[in-house]
Image (cartoon, rainbow, N blue to C red; front, top):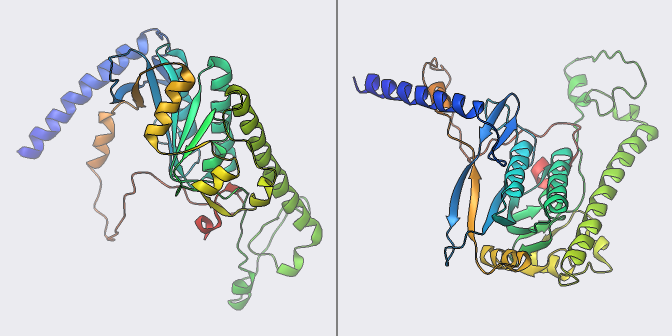
Length: 347
């Protein structure tokens, strides 16, 4: 009986939710209140994280880049991580009360393209709306985590933040020895001699110098892009703050070899402007925006009651598994995919 009552309640809530969604979709977009992805429109819900001390109407929008950076779907609607971050920046830009954005970064990095797309979103936001973005690095802001921080007007890190790891990594596995041991013979048909690059079934002796050079050139080009993003971002910050931030050290590229840096080292190299935590970043965002006080808000995805029904009606599995929920769905690293990641994340 309890289960029946619960299901009836959920069904009622679902009907009200879908009716509200239908009405929302039929309304015009009032100043960026909605953000579109796929074929449906999503109403971002604003929540106050920290109220202002003076009841000021000014806001600082808190946008998080947390966990693995990859363009994976966050929900069945097709909303991806990159699109969701873009939607939040769009809403922050169109809201005149939002004077600055606080980018909270706690990420080891991730896919090259996803990192670059987020970088472009942040860069374009500052150009289009002339609102500063202050990066606040948490426990980890390495590789792609630093890549998305680089275009910000100001970068704050704790002295013990793990950052750096400036570089690109691509890995594959060669299983030919194992295959030969068990008599497995690969049969490959290809249109060109390099079509099977990074194949797991090729003999190491079949990987010639030309193939190695193609891969190495690709890695080098992507790595040079990373360094350009840092140079341009730091130059942009110098321009916007009129030289108040840290300049890149002359020898900073000597430390852009994939090594991990702590916040203090990054500060000494000019990769970070200031040491501190969230309070430091909020104070700097207010200063850069020219305001005395502001409330900190964040944007949440609306709760979809329909997703709860996926919990019911599933056939029990005969195989018992134990899963640890980290709060995010980490995509598997793909063989042959380039990543802005520390090497230990690929092992």
